[in-house]
Image (tube, rainbow over all chains, first blue to last red; front, side, top):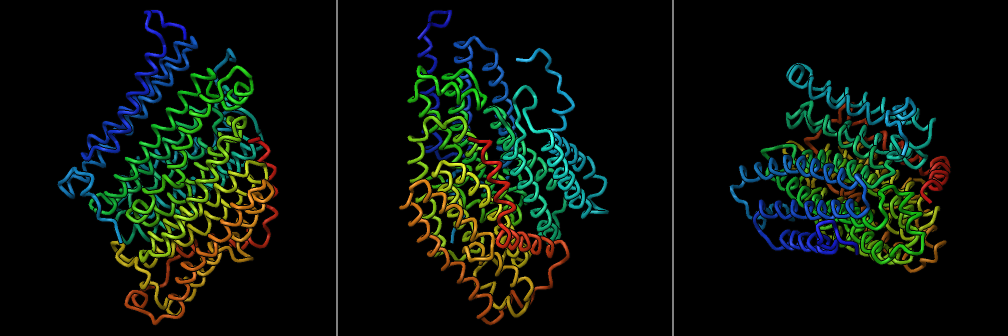
Length: 106
Length: 486
């Protein structure tokens, strides 16, 4: 793999991106606080952003950089809606533990 | 790359439905403070007018087929079919919302604006020719639906549905997006046709493409509620307002299946031998889990949620056959499924009562005697869900299993047919309760449905019969359209 101009090989960036993504997935599955779970989703999206930027550099294209902006805008919109939903859940139940949000059953 | 980025007149025509929906949705939010008190029903009328106008725009757009906006969008028969389908789903969802919103005293412009925005996102998804456009359409549709799922802010069940839908939906988006990033890194492009030709060159690593396809498969499987990623569906469909559940189980699902077909048959055609067995297993798991779990449900919305997982399984069977006839069968089935499911949910809106308290199986008791018209409509939808001849559901299943047999997926077809027999049990149980049990408190207190709800029952029933008696018209269109994604 060709090194990126500062001498760090591309695989390092992709490896970091994959590790961040896996941390996000693991956090989503194992953490119980809703805000932390939400932060893990953001971590996943930003791990993908790192991949996009690395690939854009590799292909010498500007498209990959622009995708990053699209993803950031979408993540911001999601954060606005997501935090509002989390707020209403907290208002009605006064808990942020995901295991206690379980009123839908038989 | 063309030097001139300014959109041509044809480009604007091809983007007509989305433009109309965006303008109408924004207008609804502006009008909300002016008319919310005086004319609350006007919002529904306006959004139906916008959806009908968008259907005309979609037909007009299909007269100039081709690529638009530097190859980002493609207007072809496939996209037009799904555009019209999601717009019709929108009309039926709005029609069944009138009664719900009036009963909960929650009529606002934003409810209808969000439905229009969500449909706009679905229209972008089904006509997108670029993975980034698909991603943006998917997110426009999803974010609007997250809010709709939690529409009644003070209702605990709505909150919970919105939270679960939001968390798992965004989680799935992360996987889908990572798949896009890897494909971009591998091929240097996000356009579906270019990805296809890049994967056909020998030096491209098919293993990396397989990893990307697997990540995208996980994301899409979440969105269509296919097993093993179906766990969110029962809770979300049960907790969300009934007309929103009807919408979520049909609109976003149809659009997600459209991009599923387009991505996997166009871009990933080269590695079909690797993904087809995975789809095979997912289809079988979805059908089995959905049908067997639905057997034991007593809550009507939860039962329909499990049934929608099973129906996603049938459509995955069509996808697993990886052929033009399979694509046409999936398109036909999505149309038939949308009609019968929206109709069945409209009946649930009707009987559920204020605060959606009457959702047990017993609450349907004696509906046949007290409200014969509504019961007759429900019978049509249930028979179609079972797959009885003369209904759209029958031909949908018939074409899907024929496509599976043509693709030598004999075992999958056999297991799918056995599954439909299991499903008949829980649908027939509803019929027995409706016609053979004595009317209970709930059915005695029901008033005749209003004109909007009547339309929300009659239109899908007419459509179901149309697809069941004259399936050829829609199927031949679907077959012609399916050649576009090969």
